[in-house]
Amino acid sequence: MGFEHVMTPVVKIINSIRSRAKQLRTFKEKDNWSGITRTVDRLCLFLVTPVMTFGTLIIFLRGICNQPPHLPFKGAPHDSREENPRLL
Image (tube, rainbow, N blue to C red; front, side, top):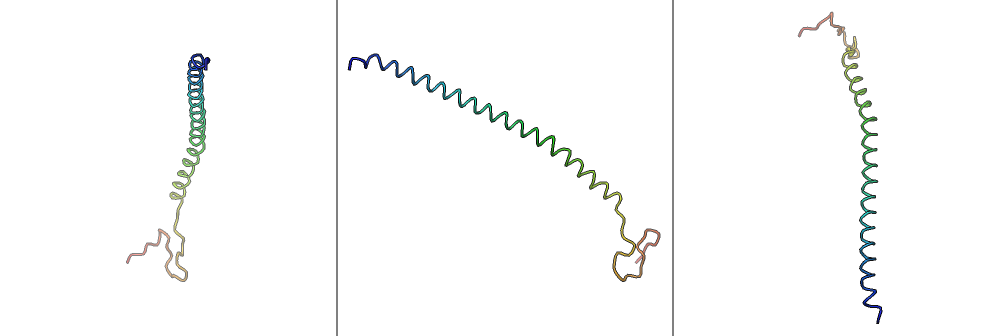
């Protein structure tokens, strides 16, 4: 019973130290997640951007080189080259 007046301030100090340590731990966890998200974001930027650029170039180049087949329909008598336009 005599230690109650001594223990109350000690318990308050311990609780304040514990809450401060919890705040620091939470801050460090948030800082760690911030670093992880930054790394993943940069990884996606450096991997996805070249893939998308390369894919877009391939699509455009395939469109430039696209030529219709000479006989697009099996059994059709008409040759579909540009030199032989079919005027309907």
